[in-house]
Amino acid sequence: MNRTSVIASIIGVALLTSSAAYAGAETTDSTSVKVNAADLNLMTAAGAKAMLGRLKLASQSICGPAPRPADLQAMDSYRACFKETLASAVATVNAPLVSVAAAQADGKSTLVMAKSGAIAKSGD
Image (cartoon, rainbow, N blue to C red; front, side, top):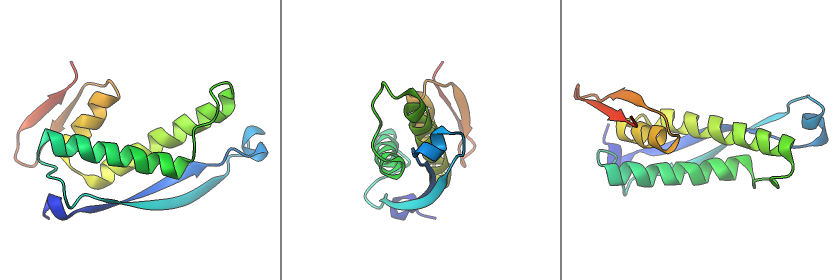
């Protein structure tokens, strides 16, 4: 599959920040957003970083606007939604350098095996 013609479809689980969610009854709503990667070369660091930026924006649109920082429960729900949705999107794209960029942005150190057999290390 040609990586430059990939259109990733993100399926996220948006946690609704209703009063029912605060009461412990987690309500979920599935949603998807198409992210165009046709103009990116996901085999380069620059292309992977650009794709990660697009995936982050799509994840934010799925999870809704960030709540006020003072609303700790809503902020925790938003962060969980964003993290889960972004991880799902990165996995869907299935491009090693996008995975490396996501791990670096998250401050994690991981080993990623590329299809060519090369190993790329992110972080320390």
